[in-house]
Amino acid sequence: MLKFVFLAVFVLGTIAGGSQVLINNMLRATMTVEDSAKLRAVKSRLEQSVRVVSGQVMMPLGEEEDNKHTLPSFFTGLRNSANGVKIVYCPYSERDVLTASSVISMSDVDEYDITTVSVQGVSYVSESIRPPVPGVAAALILPDRASSDVLCSDLSIDANGNYELVGDSAGQGRVYALTFSELRHIRSVGIFK
Image (cartoon, rainbow, N blue to C red; front, side, top):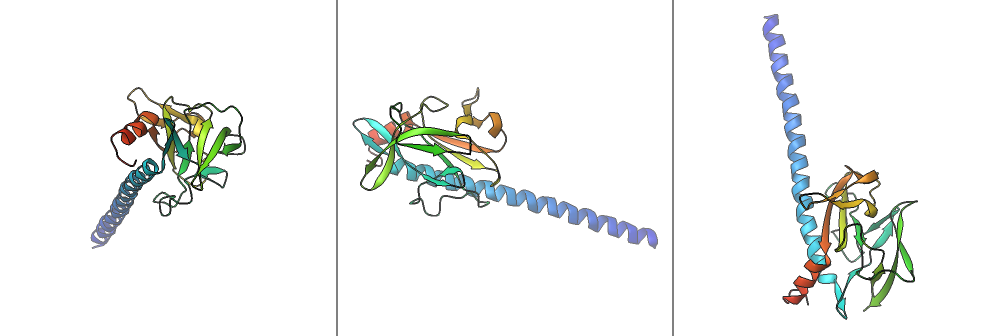
């Protein structure tokens, strides 16, 4: 009888533990799917928000929050990942910065110079330092945690053509990028003119 009780407790404990693992995995998968859908919406919104002036693609300027550069305030409902962490936004320009009018801050020690112009009340990045990966117009970084110190300067591309975070940011989030050629193509075929 005692063996039966121990066996029952063991089986129930195993089932409960397995259920917890299953629930955690399902939650993580759901958050990944939600983040992917949100990033598609953010990319679409950025594609719509881009301005092309005299052939130059200009990205909208974001907001400085908690030592991170985040999406513009008019991206209502799209600024946080599924776990509530702000999406980090790194906009660049095709033109090298000559005289900086502002900076994009990523931490107490990491920032980069930019120049902005205002078009219909919205600020756009007209000049910047060169992006860490040539041709990148903007990077979107989903930090794993709010305390993750991800840096725009840690953007890289692997041998398979996938964007990744390296250096101090390695393993602290996922990164997605829009390129100038991609944005120029979208404009040339008449989408979001």
